[in-house]
Image (tube, rainbow, N blue to C red; front, side, top):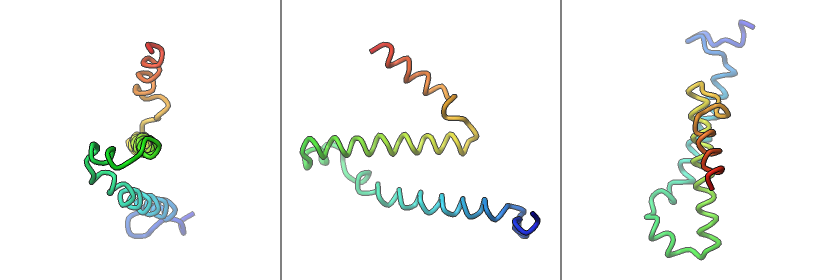
Length: 95
């Protein structure tokens, strides 16, 4: 077990590797979303047909949801028990 602990800071190598992978994927996500984020929403919708605009909205919603889920996990909060889930259920019941 001692071989899995990094000598410098006491952080397990496996955890360091997972964090490095997470950081890499987060950087790739940022690079992939940067064109979308750099474009004015109104200008973007003028350039796209209805299907491509819907796809763009879907990707944006999925990315925001995934990032929020990751944020909650990093903060030690179980996303399944977070109040936003109850708020969404309430909104669906009202509709």
